[in-house]
Length: 144
Image 1: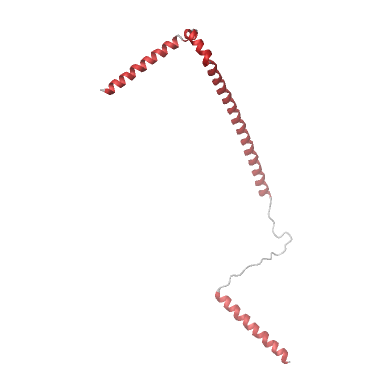
Image 2: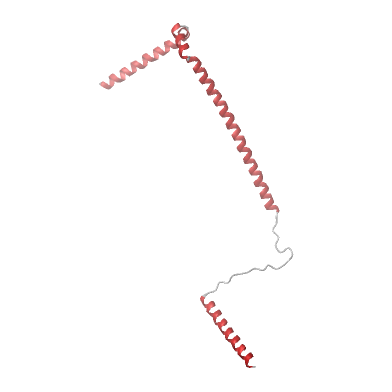
């Protein structure tokens, strides 16, 4: 029951406020001509403040729009420059040829061999036998 009273009173208040606003709108010119309205308007300068706020909002909108256009143009020009430079680089790469052996000299490359344990053992044996032969040759040279 209390909810109906609250909703009913809220509806009554809304209707009354709408009626007052309608009457004020209908007689707005007469209200603006009254001495009380003019005194309050001079004291608080409501109309002037509203006009200034509207003008400032329009000016801000115009300057923001100009900044956006300028920024967009700058970004577009930078993108166009970058695209042109990329096209030039692609043309340079496409046009150039890598020519190997212009003077027909053989390529000499150093390779690193990968040795297994068995290869290392064999190499050590051959080195040891070569050293023994060298010692034997040295002894034979001394004997002669």
